[in-house]
Length: 200
Image 1 (cartoon, rainbow, N blue to C red):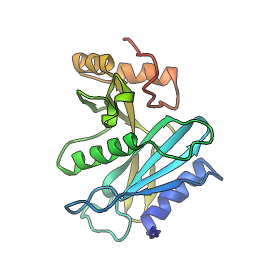
Image 2 (image 1 turned 45 degrees about the horizontal axis):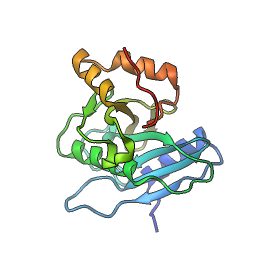
Image 3 (image 1 turned 60 degrees about the horizontal axis):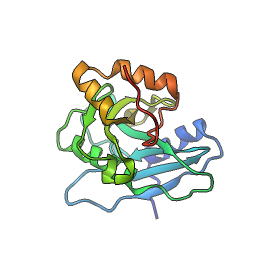
């Protein structure tokens, strides 16, 4: 049974205000080999897409970090992926992506809004994701941040990029123009491996 720690309760409450009446599925991760890491993901079954919200990068219980202004890492990840009507199973590949990015951050990687990650394989190691091999981090499209007793919690949305888009971002040295085009096309910024690529 998932213990509703104060920090997790705040995440529930804040997202309940964004999507009232929608009950999320809770995916808990088993403890890793070391300390830290994600505790799990809240998966909101919305019309046409899943909203995934991580929990565990921020301080869910007592304050343990020295920085009073932010909670833990200062952010949790979100991601939105397509969902068929009636689908109640969260795809495993997106859970692998969220956990891998969290582990990468905890291993010392600098991850922030505007940063991008280029990988040689389809997201989550799922061949069905085809040419979607990269990610960019943006402010969440619905909820940018919230205040908690342990400090500020921002929400960083992961958005999947096609291989050629990742190459364009690498060449330009910035993801901003591509992010603007993606947002114009889809205000939710879904990570949809079936979408057509955007060209600068």
